[in-house]
Length: 269
Image 1 (cartoon, helix red, strand yellow):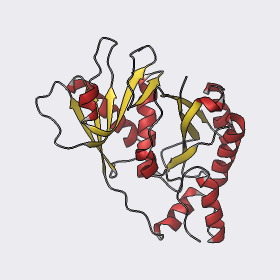
Image 2: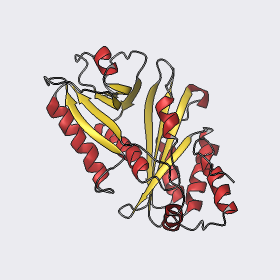
Image 3: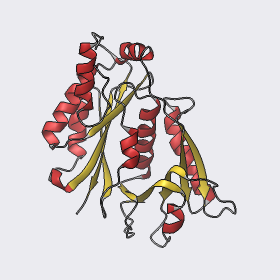
């Protein structure tokens, strides 16, 4: 039986694969040992540019992202971050795989053409109170706070470094583009148990008609004692409650307690 690629319904496909391989389903620790002996797909190091109007702001943002990741990972190997300010005289010599533009106040112009020249994918980040009009061709996000922005991206990049079995299909991630005028929002939840984490996420998530959404990513964070059954319960409950067919990824860490959930959704008006 071929090992499945992870995408929509990837969790169930992978569990079916493990059952057919007579593997243990008890815990991530056991699964990590099992997977070490299996063929692991090669993942190149991705170059990630963190761009701001001023170098000091880009440096500060990179410090926040790396600091959040270092709580669980001493040294990333699959991502390399570069802070870059538009006030610098030098220019990057090659495209970043991803470029994140940390947008300033409403009077700060959006350097559209220059950003497009910096990254294969360009992410535009705004705080909720910023009403800047966004052009097409970029992935745009509206965040309640800077901490929400930092914690989501640190978690998503951790899932690439410490993916366990919930491996996001990064090839599809880089190829996908949201439709024009879509903007992403994130809902978060934490709990000591899977059900408590789900309830916390549902309390913060909008119950908007799912037809208004254009792509969703769920990140599941857990401790090393997390059971695979916990992941199944989380995904099944959210699919029933939100009627969404989302892509799931996740990671586990010795330094994490309880269960954390982050649901990113691109929506259009």
